Length: 483
Ligand SMILES: [Zn+2]
Image: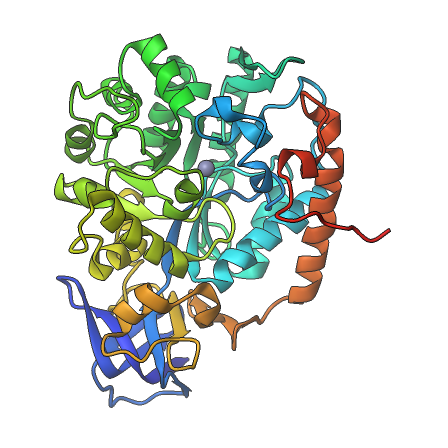
């Protein structure tokens, strides 16, 4: 089956980089791209008009948690200024033994919601760096049914985070549990790597640099090498973590990871905001950006999430200039990769006080080609002969968008995830006219809402101070809830 996508602005990869072809064409044959660029005159079986649309490689979202938006909502806990500045502990440090994991149908509902929510807004490959646990058979089935491309395995750590009754954060080390979780992860990779016609791939996830002991981080990296898969951990994500690593190892998180051999070109690090280059840690000793560049590790930049926590990289441009590979992700909600392009661009300009940085070219490259290094995938993030047919048709010609001369600048300046009209993964059309083709969207959303409201109702039961969600995150105005 050969399909010609014609009449749009085609972002084709020339071998040297992306190029934009006005009224270009893309030919898809089964799961691969046969042609991308100028006119195509060969025979085709079907035609798809892309008039007024950008025909873009699908975005590789390097930071997704398949846990739904319930916990994310608590991210900016107004009672927890001591997290400096709010972070994952807001929803991931319960009173010990008080947080009950959800049953498999709830887990499945939230996973489906995340996959489709991200897919509809431009993510064709999702790097799942850790979500709800269990029912891995169901996880693989979901990837199979929904048609998405995913890299995943259960995250592992040997220091769980808890709160005591005074709200003090503590780390509870259990070496055996960490080893078991690593085994669960390697079993997952052995069992599912290559499942769903090759769309489900394995990678390892050491949860956070400070929630893993040094032996566990070393064992995780060794296992990743043995399995020939990438590995991720969160590092440089908040000042609590930065300080803990300084106290334990007397090094920055980046330097520590480099020194234990964790960093190489198959390593993805989530966030890496706090480094020797950032002013807040007041630790200008060494050169973390050089270390990142020399080891070849990729930085997973999630600009919007960090901006809402009042933090950002210092800076996107400085990382690029130092030779660091930067890829883009969403982390929290909304998982809108188009918006993420704009946040990356604007925050780079504001941080450096320089409008000549954070160029549309560089943020678009980060959202497409940036992830290809640690994934070792020359067939993703680009439209070129032989590449996987992971394609977006993004509607740029409507009253909600600017009139433009350059469609990439229009996308970065004025686009949003809801402009994504068509999503093709592995040659299959998964979203058409902005609606998912394989599932009842309203039902997926309704199930996720029920699961999330149930989660919120349980919060006072595990929270150190018994606070309700409305007390943790006060609504913008008083909300008179219906009886
Ligand atoms: Zn994360």
